[in-house]
Each structure stands twice: as C-alpha cells, then as structure tokens.
Length: 240
Image (tube, rainbow, N blue to C red; front, side):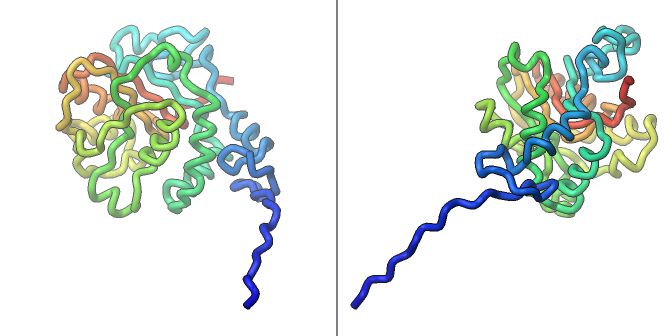
C-alpha cells in the first residue's frame, strides 16, 4: 500500500485588510505600507494639543480651560483625528463587527503613542467598560480588543472587567455636550482594589471627554493615585 504524500505549497502573500492589495506575509496586522501611511496622515501632533485634555492648544501648552479647572484624568492623548479613512475603518470594526480590523487599528495606535508613555509605569490598564446591555447588543467590547493587542506588545497587566461596573445609559454619540456630561454622572462603580495605583485607560474615540472624565473620577475615588488615558481617535477639531 502506497503512502499518501503531501506537497507543502509555498506561502502566498496576504491581502491588505483595507485596500486588498497583496502584501508580504510579514506586514504587521495585515496592513500594507501605503494604507498605514494614509492612516498616519491624521496623526495628532503634540505641539497642537493640550497635554491634559487633548483639546486645541498652541505650542503644546496646557489650555486655559484646564488651567482654570483641571480634568479628572492626569493626561489624555489621542493618536489620530476621527476623519476618513480612520472613521470608516472604526465604523466597520465597531458597528459592523469586523473584528479583523482590531489588529491594524492597534498597529496604528502603537505607531503613534503618547509622548509620556515611555516615562510611566502603570499598575493596571483598563479598557473603557461597556454596560451589559451594550455588550450583548454589540457582541464584544471594541476597546478590550484594542487593549488585548496592545497589552501583548507593552507587557501591560489589564484590569479584569469585573473590577468596574457600568450601568446602561443612552449612547453619548446621540447627545449634545452638556447632555453628555449629565448622561455619564454616576454610571461607573469601581468594585476592584485601586489603592495607590497608577491606571491607564484605553478607549477608541473621545469627543467631549465626559466619559473618560467620569471613569477617572470614579477610579480616583476608589483610591487610584493617577489616571492617564490613551484613545485611538479624537473627534475634536483639528488645528491646521
């Protein structure tokens, strides 16, 4: 009886997840170099934003609003502006449940890190929690997917999601600025131990910063000594 033999076929290039052009198998997260450069065109420059709230500022100075009343988080950084093509990729990832896009978005974040990241040593890293209802509707937490990939590269210790509870509230995207602040008041409850901990928050998009602020306030009430935030994209106005 003859033994069956199998011929190993040579590896074939993968397709870029965005433009579908063939790219080498070693390309990080399935992005071709051209698409990564296109996404990086929306990079936030540290000299254009306030280091506390990531709002528009000249020369990277703390803005007047933060000088008058500092936000609950110690620093906020956003990697890119929420404009096409980033906005389209995020929409497919978040709302069309294309989990494969988590990897290229994490690569984009990693290529444009916060200027303070290398100087900080975090005890815990927390993905922006979703309410149970929102998680069941969406099927996953997009921020957890980003954190999972980033944590592997930075050797972070993620906070168990059970450590912070988020009650259901209407989506922030449907509300005006003042309504956003009222909508998030008291929606978080810290169950875990954050005493004397330095915490980093990971989120996908920030607009008013109200949700990040409320979560930071909750963590500090639970004992956190400092809270930093890093989001993929900012919906705030870009300075030209």
